[in-house]
Length: 85
Length: 191
Image (tube, rainbow over all chains, first blue to last red; front, side, top):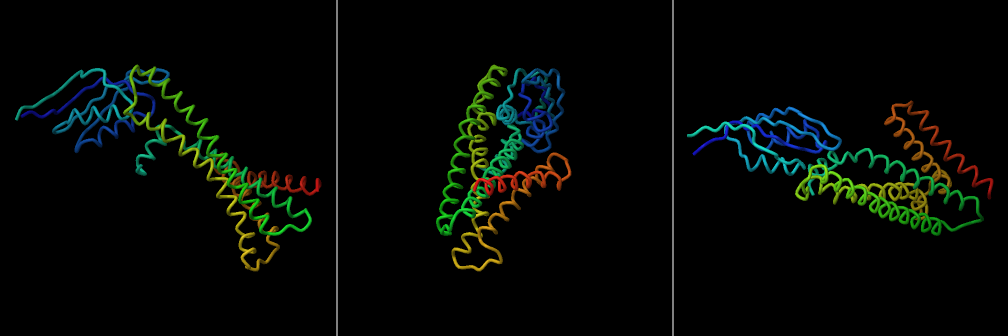
């Protein structure tokens, strides 16, 4: 049994929802999720983000679903921190 | 669809302003059309109140249907175009996203606002005529009362626009009222 404690994701998203709303949507997908977003690049219609999520037990499938629901696409998982129980 | 979901779609599509604009523009249309119709009947020879009510009601419904259909057709096309452009930029399908739901639902929401505004305003303006027709005694002539209600609504729409635009509310209200007065004056002169 393992718990995902930290994820760093490379995400491409449209301008809407804005970064704050996007962070809120991800944070609301699990209890105690802390979300930090760094905007790396802004294009005409899209933004490239580095999304850092921390929590006791991150549900990657759920987070991925929230990202897709908000019109964004997950490009890569850049960092992970997993703890074995 | 839940209220929270509607709120999310409106935020993503940023269509609150569009809906507000449509409400005022078509509401103004509805009020001014009713004012013109009632003024037309007022300056004509005797017309039965029932005929005035039916004509105004039918016009209100026609404005409502026109508002719904025209806004839906244009908004649906615009939203679909926006979605396709976004999908091109994202290089992926957004079928399961809020953006696809925006393209489906927002045109209906905008169309409803665009259609309901003139119909609702027309119904409010017709109300004194209907009350008089049902036997209620009004302090003024029913048509005069309905025209005053129309003027008041037009003034309030102007006030609303003034508050949005950050201009002096009374000034924008009076500007709208001036348009209504000019319409009434022109109809009077033509008659």
